[in-house]
Length: 270
Image (cartoon, rainbow, N blue to C red; front, side):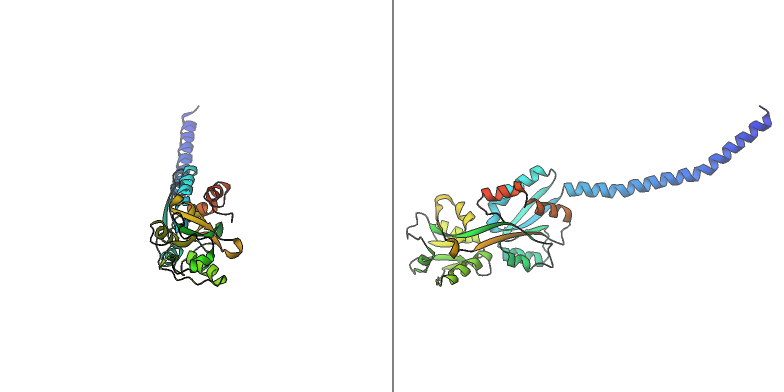
């Protein structure tokens, strides 16, 4: 090969390399940008899997949701569920005040309906009924709603703005039974506690709560035609920073696994 031809080929190769360099550099930059763009997605996914959820829930769900929460965490590694239990009216106030939380479960649809601006669509995940919780051994032999009108019996009820208090008023009014409670409590657990401690002789509570008291109280069933059905709707909270994870938890509450936990605790199908 002549020296002249060799020099020409070397020059052509150098020119080609010079022309390709910017394109290769641009591709590398695009790849870096692509990698940078992918990182937030991967990070978000990891964050969703490791979400710390705060769920506001009605007091009557205290025991069963502790079991449900443990089951959910087991089947969703990296997710932690923390519950805050209170009367539904208290929970509603917290949501309206912007308390940091991801999901809400109330003991009535009326309370949830009043929070449509703050929550996503609600789904009823369980139902419940009322019973009379009589003191240990049922010394007053209470066996029907009408017995609660006896002035000798100290009856405690939930306040009327509380779902269980509203249900109690509803069934007593329907039977034209006048009861003068010795106190009106902020949630169903407070009503039950008064009876358990002997500070009241009887109270109206949810069937599931009374069942958890063992022999501390006697549960007196109320006939269906004199009773009220409590519905428990669940919804995400719009201001949640864990929207996807919160929606996943709310959806899980309607799955066979969650429904079995609820029904084993005495809740009825939605």
